[in-house]
Length: 349
Length: 287
Image (tube, rainbow over all chains, first blue to last red; front, side, top):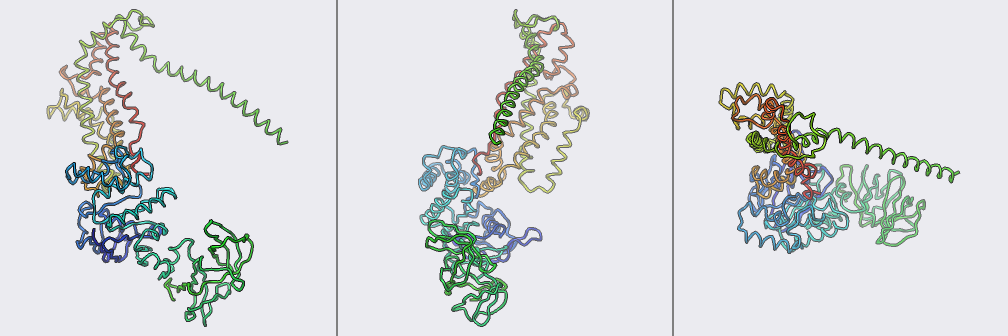
């Protein structure tokens, strides 16, 4: 186990600046999730830590040692790939012990490590099978087993669950989290799925266009996003944004509808975004009129999609409501939960 | 209205089905006829080889009085040539794959700048007529003393086997999931270890395919053998058969028996190798 420090790291592909001045400190034993939309640079950063991509400038340290010039096998990391990347001609046991064999670990020790990892992952009965004879979930477990047997300082996961079906993904999510609790190894996990990030991470690094948008604990990012991008990316359904301007303690949407600012009355300016999460809108006769277009009951809640003025809005009500598309309901924003963002996308309140 | 149109559709379907059935029957007959024409020379070769010698055209249509006289004579006269062919073809396969596998791997996996230009050049080299290569080799072989040698024939046949194998193996290796090779890197395998322990086992089918076609080419090579051998010391069966026909035109039985014997290794190889040619080996590597 070790801490990981990423200091002023840049990545260029020719003239394209893919990663810009990345600085992240990951404490020993932390489970850090890099999350962001496709192309934001999260996988590139992970591959740079793994040694699969060169670092254009800056330094990456693992356990206090700069690893920029070390080969992947010298970095004491193990990586789980999105598409498993198992050796198809080897059995499960051979796949798991390949790295140990290359490191000339004696066979009894090798077997003991494979048996231990197989027991942790419930693979004991599959050790003689080849990858083609396994289900998707089992293959993913073998890929994790291959990482575990090496007992590395850092685990790297590159979107390991995105090839699994929804149900299995939830199950494997819990298994990976449990594995981390059990082994306590520093883990860096890349995903584009913000729910995965929220449920698994000790800390989340939100990335946007090759830059770190915000770093923080999952609920901190949810409750207090510093940028409009983070506010919109974290949370499902996503936060509502109503554009407009604020003056003298009032927010007027671009359609001329007045919304309360509550404790944020001091905020003023043009081209603002009035952010409110779907669950922070409640029904009330004195509220803002909303034209309902779609009603989606999920069982646990009812999501109502519609428009305030001409701007799209989603509400999530815990109650089971008898609302039909075409109806007009009145909603009240929870004034303590507002997020006001300026023209540049930075938080103002 | 709707009932009548559904009846119409149903009757159309039946008619089409009937036509298909008739069409299918006709197609089968046609297919069997074509197959019969294609296989007739093979049948005639086996038929003549099992009967008393003489002119092929005078041989009865069915081998009723079976004799292995032709085979005994073929073994006696051509056994050495068959062995030479086997050594040359096997040597060409081994040498071609030893050179082609690392070359294809390097061109496919490493970010070689001119990889595509090299591959194009290899492809173009396949278009050079064999006789041009054979003539060039004759001059070179005379100087370095490789005429009338097994090694000379192996190298000559490999001049066709290597580029072909590189193209086949490269095409497969390019389709190999890069993440598997990266996983090997992280596991601690260098380029050579990755080639030996991961890439080659995963490329088994393309290796079998490349090896098979190299064997078939070398086994049936006549041009290099004719150009690069001037004595009877080293003579593959193709050349042996050619000399045999000119010398024993009256004894077709042993000529055909030699042809049958010369066909057996290729038939056996094709039967055993065909499942590798069709199947894939990356199943389970990635989703």
